[in-house]
Every structure is written in C-alpha cells, then in structure tokens.
Picture 1 (cartoon, rainbow, N blue to C red):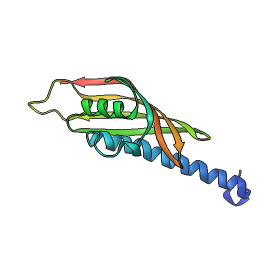
Picture 2: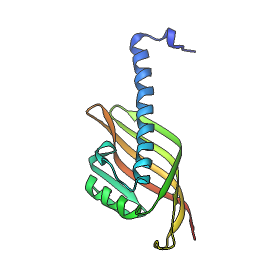
Picture 3: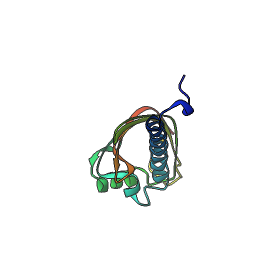
Picture 4: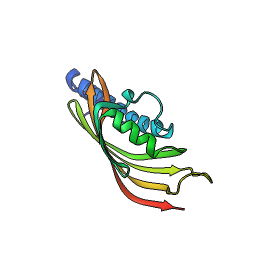
Length: 148
C-alpha cells in the first residue's frame, strides 16, 4: 500500500492535483445547481465556456447566451436542485462528470402546468481554461417525473 509519506514528490504532486481537480469539478456541479435555483441569475461565465452545448428536456442549444436563455425560460419559478453521486473522470484539461439530480419546481396557483419534480442524471463535460474548470457540455438524461 502506498502512503503519502512513501510517495515521491512528483507522485505526491499528482495526487494533490487529482484531489484538487475533483474538488473543483464537484464544486462546479453544485455551482450549476445554485445558478439554476437562482433562476439562472448571476455570472454564467463562472459556470460555462463560451461555446457550451446543452441537451435537456427543454431543448438543444449551443453557446453561453443560448444556454442562459434556455435555463431562464425553463426555470422561471422557484426550483431546488439536489445533486448526489457525483463521479469525476479527469484526463489532463478535460473531464466528464456524472451526477444524479432531483429538481423540485415550486408551482403556485398562477404558474403554468408542468412537472413538480424531475429525477435524472447529469452528464457534464468540463474544460480547464486559464486555470479554472468550466462546463463545456450539459446533458440531462431524464429518469422520472411527477406531474400534479
């Protein structure tokens, strides 16, 4: 068994880098959820690359502005995204992140009909640009939904 004390400085650096990447990518997934729960308000440049691609139940779009417009259109009421089972696979400056997501849509008497809960899986692509991770693709694979 290899312990941190038995690692060479180069190997130890690689281990720390892998842990830092995993933490940064996990934070990025949670930042996406908070951004959506804030009705897609705030700086999307902290979350997405310029040419991000999204494929969701709301449609397929490309480019940060189009992703923001789609998210705002589909999150025009209060939501609460819960994300778990985050798995990160990094190769150099690109990564794939998968996660389970449950989204609760808080409907009011005057809101349009639609689902109140959705469950699915995120498949996210990420790139390291200028030393920080950003989402380059967002795919939502729906698994279940509750409509009231």
